[in-house]
Every structure is written in structure tokens, then in C-alpha cells.
Image (cartoon, rainbow over all chains, first blue to last red; front, side, top):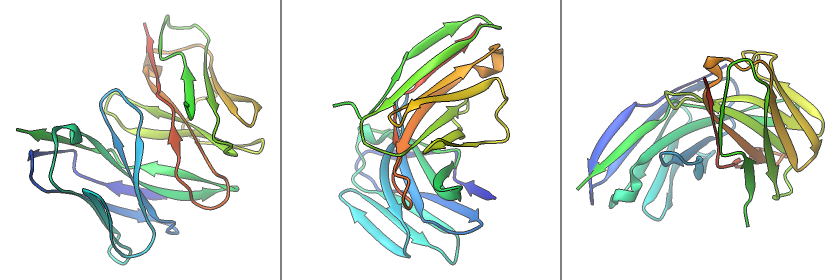
Length: 112
Length: 113
């Protein structure tokens, strides 16, 4: 089975840097996704890591350590529009397709 | 162009009714999914449907049934609605081969009274 743990809520200041952690246990590793979900909207894809290390994409970076079962999402130069929930997810294989198990999400509030 | 669309966006109904939610994707994906997001915002897989093969999450009551008229559509039919079915239901689609990104529809907010 899969188990994902991430903090429930975080608060950070506009312009600052915030790191959102995710730990996981999974039988068979197929990478790790981060999704962003604004209130009342659909989740949207942010990043996918399958190899160890840091992947940078603009203001957002995602890190993975497979040996530690650990990932984080790093958000730089925070903007008010970054206030959202951030969902960590791991895929698992089921009869020809992959399903995602999501963590409960981290609600990030960016304050002025 | 809308990639994954769902209708209706809002659905308010009485307990015991039967209702359907429609989902369509124009991404050419082979696999479609239904997720339920409860009041605590926990997003949980309900079904995945791939080339006529259905994978069901064992916790989903059999009052819920997905129906796929073709590869681009996966509708969700719910019988005998209960109060606990109130949630946001998201449709998603993705490629079958390998691990790929899933693209989500805008969600259907279901309220059972």
C-alpha cells in the first residue's frame, strides 16, 4: 500500500521562501508528483520527480530522496497567488494503468 | 480549448435520488479517473477506466457506477444518494503507457439534502 504524510497547514510571508515536506511509504516506487490546488478549483500539475535530486522550474523546485522516502516542494519569492493547497502524490500500478494516491495536502497561506 | 470538462458544476439534490455527472476529455488519453474530495479536502481515487477495463477502489459503494460510452467520456452514475455523498467529484485523464501526468476537470460540487 501507499502512505503519504505532509503538514496540514503552513503560513509564509510574501517574498519569502517556503519548503513543503512530504514523506511517503510505497510498495514499488514510480516517482512522485506535486500538484497545486487553489480553493474551489481543480488540482494542476506542478512537478514530477523520479530521480534523486533537485529539479528547478522557475520559482518552484522539487526535491526527491528515494532512500529516505522524502520529497519537498520549494517555493521562492512567494506571491499572494501562491496561497493554495499543495498535494503530494505517488503513482501505483494497477492492471495496465497508474493510479495516484494523494496526501491530504498542505494548505499554504501567503500573508503580506 | 478545454482539456477535461465536467457537467454540471453544481448539483443539489435530495437524499434517495439518482444522479449522473458527465466527463469528457479531448486530450486523446486512454485512461480516465474519478476522484472524490471530501470536506477535509482529501482527494481519493474512486475508479480508473482504461480500454474498457475498470479498476475500482474497494471502499467505493456499489451505488456508484462509471459508464464509458467511448474513450473520451467517463460518466459517473450515483444511485440512492446519501448525505455522506456530498463532496466535490473530479474527473481526470492520463496516458495509459507509463507514469504520466493526470489532468483534472473543474469538479462537480454535489450537495445531498
